[in-house]
Length: 181
Image 1 (cartoon, rainbow, N blue to C red):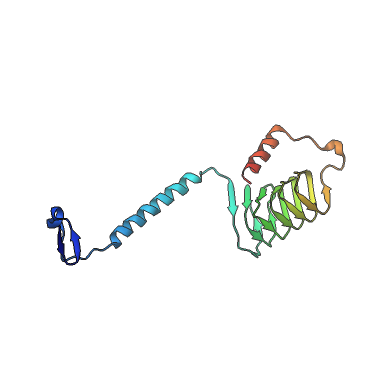
Image 2: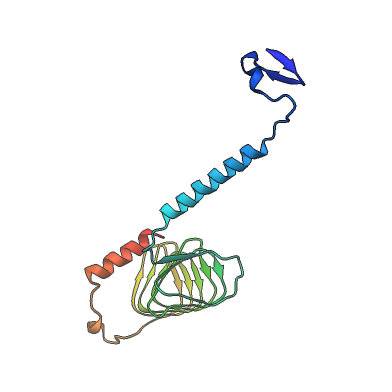
């Protein structure tokens, strides 16, 4: 080994090194960073399929905006604005909190809702749900552990005989939405 300009270099490769140049790590960093970006982009593309009709929203505490959507919305944040969708499904996760009114087709609650929930099809309160307000719906399911403080008014079927049992397709859809909570 020979020592040259304060650099320890093995003699076998000593002839290939330009002794006047200074080692510049930026080119290696830039290449590493480009490779990292490509890897990250490929991973995101694999996680999101083009036919996915689900959407997720994460908000900052105290957000005050009205949300209107179609399809399925997974809400994982805190909002003080109303959430509306004529026939959509709203899934509020354990971390989700809504301090406003909800008007959707299907509401699956596993977080906190302080406000009224109107669901044209059904409302499902999972075991970690806390709801303070009025619920207006055709069907209501409450798992043990859920807390509901308020009134429930059943719409589109004042007569108990007019409420049909859930079809297998409706049960499978509910199970699919619950699996993502």
